Length: 338
Image (cartoon, rainbow, N blue to C red; front, top):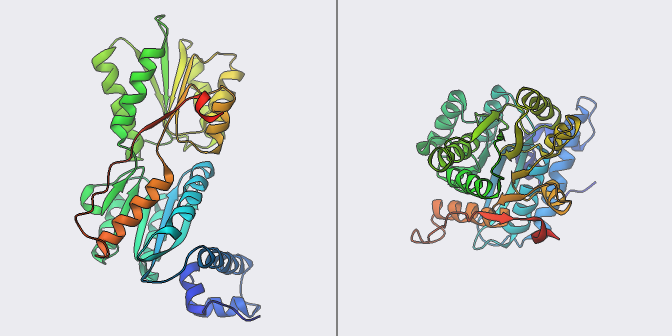
């Protein structure tokens, strides 16, 4: 069947060699099904992107590497696909690498593979481990600009950070919780997906610093390493509830909010206040159902616009004097999503 895209374009989008793509397109027996699926997905992605944008002007291929639960990465992908076709004077083609969990070695292998195949830039949300930062230093030395998203790495390893100011976000959540809580003695449960995500750790620090200044007698119990995945998050929360019968409020930094609610229900414990992050589909529904008290969020489409401007500035396609503002911290309550 004739293809509207060249083998080279498909290979670049799929992250495969041209020879492998050629074998897959001609249904050679030596090609695995997973490879055929990658080629089909790459062609479908190219179809969507070419239909969404007039590819006039310079074209850039940007790789988006995100480790997060699907509910978050899907919302980010939708925002980027909606916003980036509107960008001018250049056109952006996105290659998405979205996984709920990856081992450190898998992240490093993926990043090296992207750099080896060629990329005009990487948008990155992964843990800030020593080995990953060493990998980023080497990739940066090859001339591939890196923009971190929502969670950060060392400043000298990336072009810029995009997302809300995380320490300020944690302090904002603490302020609201402190104002909303009843005066009775109780504990707050703080949940992270992993302490290796620098952005989550900064939210935790901002939260604890606020209470240390404003309400130092408030007890806070932290759990982490559930990776925002429902099964592991529920197990961690159930253990915390058993160990601390005074917990009655939650600040969920790392997600897995349905699992947190299930754990409280299973333990037959009420939640006085439940604060969360990000207006993804799950959290919107939980707000509508009155299960969350408030959600801190930022606009994913505005984030996509900031990312595009950063790369345009890097490649000198827009004036260097253009300022890119910090993401605003929004507060959503049940009435705001009805």
